[in-house]
Amino acid sequence: MQLAITALGNHKINFIAEILPAMRDCKCNILEIRSSRLAQSTAAYLLISGNWNQIAKLESTLDIIQKRLDIKIHTLRPEQKDKPKECIPYSLETISLDRDNVTESITSFLFDREIDIEEISGSCYQAPYIQTSVFSTKFVILIPPQLHLLTLREEFMDFCDQLNIDAILEPIKR
Image 1 (cartoon, rainbow, N blue to C red):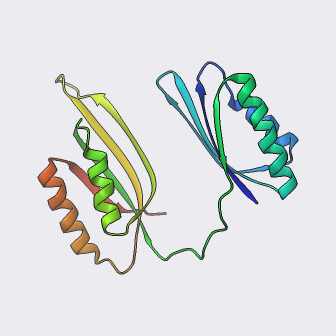
Image 2: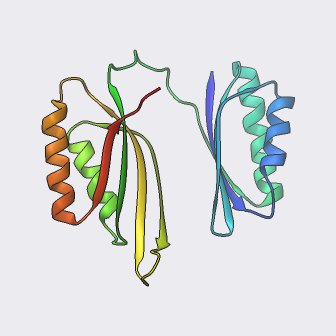
């Protein structure tokens, strides 16, 4: 079985140092882990595996940790994976003026074409030499094989031109 965990708390609490030993004590294994600092908070995302009993014990332990440290922990038992889709992994990076709907517009463009988003990261920063806020995003996307790549690239670049977004769309090379 697997358990997806999201945890959010004050960065001074260092709740990761509490969660990891709890997983070890419950004999669960880490499949994936990510953690990021967001302002004065820390967010952690984990995918854990174990048998039914180990996962149930970990869920109880996480509830205790959540109450003791006054943090937010949410868990979800993901359904078993379907057969993996055949897709082409691409990297998409954008830079634009900081506007409310840029990321929403990009994700809508991708979802309208049935392109899966595996990862999104983004941040706002002050552009050098000027006092303007710029927003930068990085996506990992999975393009279905039935989409014609040249047509998709042209449509996406036209879309970016309309919104004044600078973008790079390229295959991920391993």
